[in-house]
Amino acid sequence: MHLVTGGAGFIGSHLVDALVDAGQKVRVIDNFSSGREEFLSHHEDSGRVEIFRADLLDRDAVKKSMQDVDMVHHLAANPDIRLGTEVTDTDLKQGTLATYNVLEAMRMEGVSRISFSSSSAIYGEADQMPTPETYGPVMPISLYGASKLGSEALITAWAGTFGAEAWIHRFANIVGPRGTHGVIFDFIHKLKRDPSRLEVLGNGMQEKSYMSAEDCVKAMIHLIGHCDKNVNLYNLGTGDTCSVRRIAEIVVEESGLEGVSIEYTGGDRGWAGDVPKTSLEVSRLLETGFKPNLASEEAIRHTARALISEIGL
Ligand code: NAD
Image: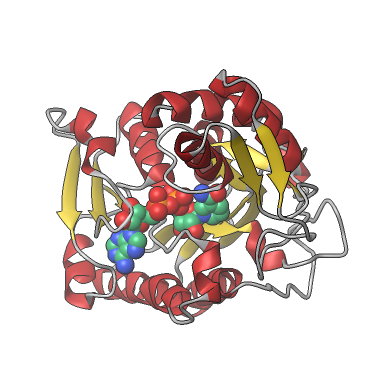
């Protein structure tokens, strides 16, 4: 049995789909704060997916969810990096403390394998681009990035002290159908409110790596099958980047709206803690034989199309 924390969320529900397709049984633990029942409803009659509605901050519940589990995929977290500018303990609790609770429940229940969704946010404003896994010292500039780095450290400590086996995936920006946050989602909602203009936070020159959710979960499963060190650390991305300016153009093109004025608020970043440029070195991932299907721009266009039909304009 595979346990997916945050399995009702955007990436988590794609991972559940991929695990079920691979013939696995899956238990989801989720508090449905940003996860949605409809993301898993297609598994209702399959008998392959159990849903355990609970909060990772409830230690007894997390311990109960570990029964008969061989492997934990820990994805639950606060996904909104910007929230850290207003509420300063969310990432600490939903990120680092939740990870501690998962690891401790695993130790108590004898579960040793954990796959973890970390983030390129741990690199902060790295001066090496593309940034390899060996880059350091890593200095996150967001509370979210700090919580991911803290979680990674707890995981390697559990591996070193209690013999856990870990796969740490440092994701690029992940995009795709069922997305409930992020730049493409925000742009579509803005156009829905006002189809005549699109406000872009910053000067639009922010440039990041994007990967489709489908490629992301395939890569996670691939790495678990192909790498067997005590701790396996990989950047997950496509090796290229796309600017926010280009994303705005793609969303407007896909919307079919005419005469939209794209307006920039100015400044080199969207908000405090936003890293204006990220580019992940992914040769370590590619050397394992994994090849993403979609490059950044293709993943963005595919996502814009899917989310416009989900959200409606
Ligand atoms: P998401 O919000 O869709 O998924 C998070 C899920 O966790 C949701 O279903 C939510 O209800 C659940 N959850 C949150 N706190 C919980 C708690 N305390 N107890 C139980 N369930 C809880 O976000 P996502 O984009 O699918 O992100 C999944 C993971 O990937 C997160 O750890 C995120 O930090 C990481 N990540 C995402 C991206 C991205 O671009 N989307 C990039 C890097 C890393």
